[in-house]
Amino acid sequence: MKQLSLFREIIVDNFAGGGGASTGIELATGLSVDIAINHDPAAIAMHQVNHPDTEHYCESVWEVDPREVAKGQPIGLAWFSPDCKHFSKAKGGKPVEKSIRGLAWVAVRWAATVSPRVIILENVEEFQTWGPLTKDGRPDPDKKGYTFRSFVRALNRHGYKVEWRELKACDYGAPTIRKRLFLIARRDGRPIIWPEPTHGDPKSTAVKTGKLRPWRTASEIMDWSLETPSIFNRKKPLSENTLRRIARGIQRFVIESKKPFVVGDRGNSLIQMGYGDPEGRRVLDLKKPLGTITAGGNKFAIATSHLIKLRGTCKDGQPVKNPMPTITAGGLHVGEVRAFLTKYYGSDIGQSLDNPLHTVTTKDRFGLVTIKGENYQIADIGMRMLQPHELFAAQGFPSDYVIDRDINGVKYSKAKQVERCGNAVPPPFAEHLVRANLPELCVNEHMSKLKRKAN
Image (cartoon, rainbow, N blue to C red; front, side, top):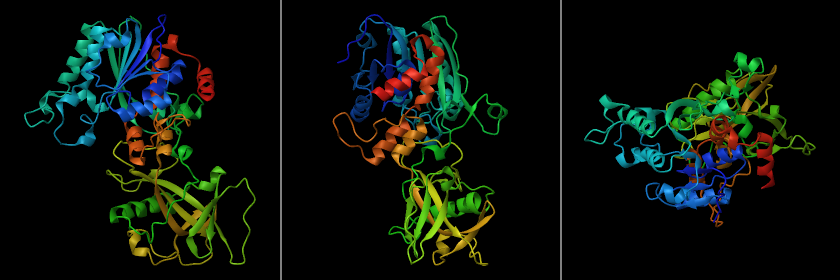
C-alpha cells in the first residue's frame, strides 16, 4: 500500500474508472493520484496496472469515509466523474435511475467532511438540467436545472466559489470532438481559471497566425497497417443501412471530393493489389524496396480513407482530416472505409454510386476519381471497425497506456476495452484544468513526459 506523504496535499480521484482523469492529473503533476475510488473491480484492476503507486479503494463512493481516506492530510484536489448515462441525451425518453442521477451529491459530502481545496466535477452537458423526476421516472420538464442549482448552492454553503463551463477535447490536443461540462469549486480564495485552448479550427485566424495549433485529426491516430476487408462477398453481409452509408460516404468523400484523403500521402503506405483478386491486397512500407513485379502483372494502387458512423443520424460519415467523433461506451460504432483505386484507362465509369452498393456487387470497376490530375477508378471498397488502441489514442491517452489486460494479467475483451474508453475522461481535459488551477502542484510538460517514458 502506498505511503502518503505527511508534508503535502493529496489528490483523490473518485469514480476513477480505467484512469482517464488520473492520467491527465499525472501528466500535469508528474505524480500518480494518491487515492482512486471505483466500485467496479475490473475498472480498478485496469487502473492498478497503469497507476501502481496509487492507493485503490474498490468500493461504492458512498461506502468510503472521506476522513478515513484522507488520514488527516489536506486534500489539494478531489476529482469527480459520476455516471453520466442517466443525464445524457443518448438515454432518450427512457426512465432514469434516481440513485445514479444522485451520485454527484458525493462531492458535497467530501466538501462537508474534508474540505478539498479544489473540487473538479466532469459530466455531460445535460448535467446542467439535473432536476426532480416525475412519478413515471422521467425528468420533470418543468423543473429542469432545479437540483443542479441546489447542488451548486450546497457547495456555496461550504465555502466554495463555483463556476462551470462546456469544453471540447479537440481544443486541448485530443483528436476527438468530445464535449463535456466541467464544474470547478474552490475554497482557497484564488480565482477559478479556465484553460485557454491550445488547438483550433485549421481555417481560423488563430491557427493561421500561429496563435493556436490546428486540431489533431483522426488520421493521426489510425493504424494504417490494419486491413480493411472488402464489403463485397462477406460471409455475413453488411446491413442495407450500412451499405447506404458507405455509398453516400464514397460519393461525398471520394468521387465528389476535390481533395480526397489519400493514405499514401502520409508517406507510410502504398496498396499492392493481387492480380485479379481484391482480397490479395496488402499494405507496403514505402521506406522499403518495392515488391517484385510478377509476370502476372501486379496492380499498384492508392487508397482513400474516411470514417463512417454506424449509429445515430449521420448519413455518410466524415473525413479523417477532422477530429474523431465522440467515442461512446456502448460499442464499436465508428469504422474506416477505404476505396482502393487503380489507374483508369477506359472510357466507361460504370454504375453510379447513388444507389446502395449491394446493387453493384457484380461490377468489377465503378466510379471515376481524379486525384492531382490523374484519373483513377474504384477497384474495391473495404470497411473495418476502429480498434481499441485507436480509440484510446483518439481520447488522448499516452501510447504506452495498458488497455488490454489488468494488474493480474487477465485479458480484456475488445468490448470491455471500448467500454472503458467510452467512459473515460480524455486525459488532456484533466491535465489542462489542473495546470490552470493548481500550478503549484504541477511540473513542466517536458519533465512529465520524461517521467512517463522512464516508467
